[in-house]
Length: 124
Image: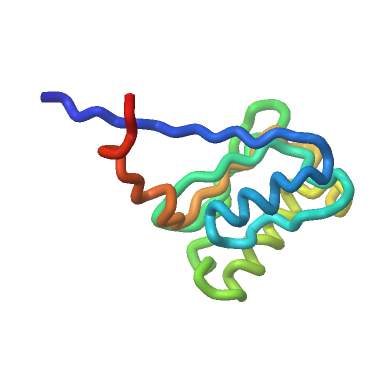
């Protein structure tokens, strides 16, 4: 029997200052995005469970670059601060001119919520 793989995609979209960053932070259990009252995120952000901390940025021409943050432990405040700082440089249009060069930022780090999902309770 071939194993079945389920993929879940959640899309968060909404008006400026509607709580998207706050909701995402709550779901993943880590404060990686800073909520603001003004428009701030200039790129599409993708979040996935990964054993190591890494960010894949795709610029507007389609070229991808991998940023490995192997020394970044997201279970410590210092590690979260480093991840937040890197994401701010890549996505915050109010603070970083570089952020407009990227069309997407793919963030991977250990997220237990995304790793352990009880599929047997889903009604398909």
